[in-house]
Image (cartoon, rainbow, N blue to C red; front, side, top):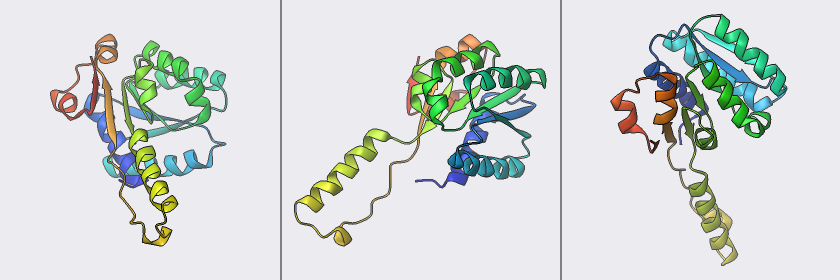
Length: 186
C-alpha cells in the first residue's frame, strides 16, 4: 500500500494530467480533522516537489464549502482535491454538484463521490480490506496464534473515473488515464 505522501503526490499528478491548464489546486479540508491536517501536510510537500500551487480551503460546514467554491473559482482555473472527512462524505452530493457547477476538475478520496457524479476518486479497496481482515480473524478464531499470522500488504489503490462527468465539464480525458482506470463509469 502506498504511503500517505505517495497518495498525495499521485492525486496531484492525476489532477494535472486531467487538466494541464490549472492555475492551482485547491484542497478542501476540515481544519478540525487531525487526519486531514496530516494529509494536507503531505499534499503541500507533494505540490512543492511538483511545482504546483496549492491553496487550502477550509470548511467546517457545508455553508463554508459553498463559500469556498466561489472564492476558489474567482482566483483562476482550479483543480480540487477533497480530503477525507465525515462532513464531506455526508454532503458528497452537494460537493460534487458544486464542483460541477464551477467546472472544477475534482479528485475525491472515496469511490462513492464518483458514484454520486464526481469526476475521479483514488481510494483503497474497502471490500478487499474487509475480506482480508475476516480471513485473519477466522484464522485466529480457529486457533492460530496472532503473532504467527503473517502481515499482508493491502491491495493497491483503485482509480475510479467518471467519463460522463468529464464530458459534462468539457474535459477531454487523456486515453492513458482512461486505460489506467480500475473502474470506468461511462
